[in-house]
Image (cartoon, rainbow, N blue to C red; front, side):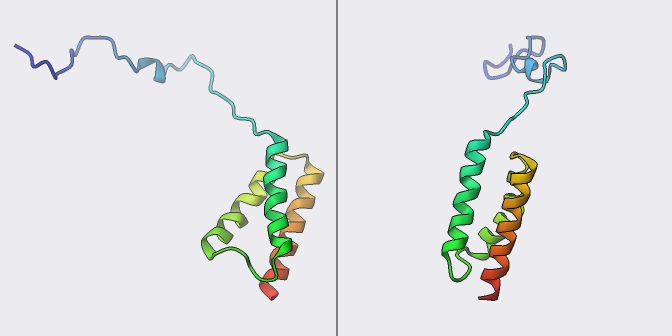
Length: 95
């Protein structure tokens, strides 16, 4: 007699659809307005500071994530924001 806790080896797997190769892969698309708002908020925080406003871990995070987030914006705007962020970091590190 089988234990009530033991599953039936021949029963259909309830999670089998998770591995269905015929299903399309969902595509994520960031909202450019939300990305822009977040980047501008980070940039404003940097501009308002006279010294680095972030602890080293958060600074490292922003150095990595800021340029990547900018990829969701039009190229010219993304390049401008990346440049402005890098310039603020140089200014703050010199302070």
